[in-house]
Image (cartoon, rainbow, N blue to C red):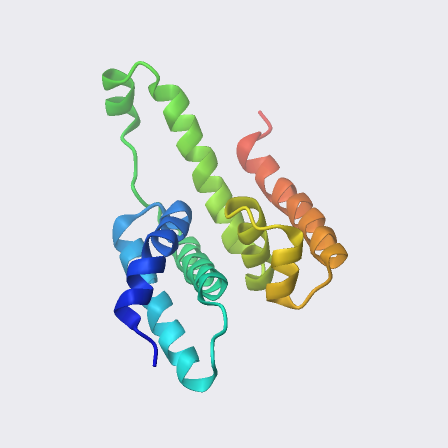
Length: 168
């Protein structure tokens, strides 16, 4: 029998950080967090889970990417920044604004990727998993993971280039 309170206590912070790093919105992160553990519960009803942390990370990333897709389809920006206020109240406001714009563009690009490709990329690049660990989760060879990462980086670069460096 799974002690869900203990599991949430043990893995919750890591799951929360993963989700929030991607969605950058507290309310969305709360919902994704709950959805992650509900999905884990439903999955545990169908099969025995041998290793909870990687499963929870995958579920968390999938929920966060889904949320980014929802945002992208509605063309809604989360946490809008009032540029005039930022410039008048912070000496490094333009740098912060540019960094936030780049982060939003990156989240948009992630939402455009196929789900498995986005998850694989996030686990490796954002969560620091090795190619071997990612391969184990996706039933792929290390070489296939490396090739997929290379293609994903290229695709992200292609999508982000026009957003980050528009032609004048």
